[in-house]
Image (cartoon, rainbow, N blue to C red):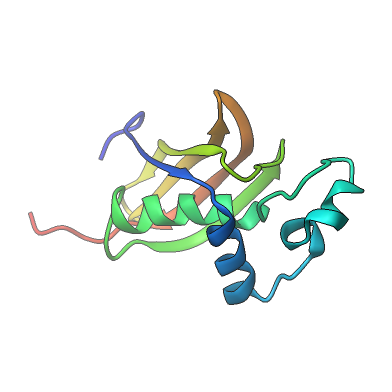
Length: 132
């Protein structure tokens, strides 16, 4: 691994994704699930859970970079814009620092829709040890 290295994941958010996330997480906020309620909010329509987008970052770290065996230590999140049904979310994790002695990797993390950040943050993980 090297500073600047990155990995991406692209997902289109559908109603089934939002409903499944609500079921698994227990977050049944009507802004995510009820069209009539969501129409009365500043968003004007249903939006995805912010943590659904954040879970795409987790998927990158656990399956791509650093990959299987990675252990999350921390994640900061700043939600910038809503994700709506049908939006294509591009999640990206970019290595910003390496601590070889502790086996820790720091990532700049972002999720974007149409080139605009919907979520930004920083993750720290313990990278799995690889045989020499």
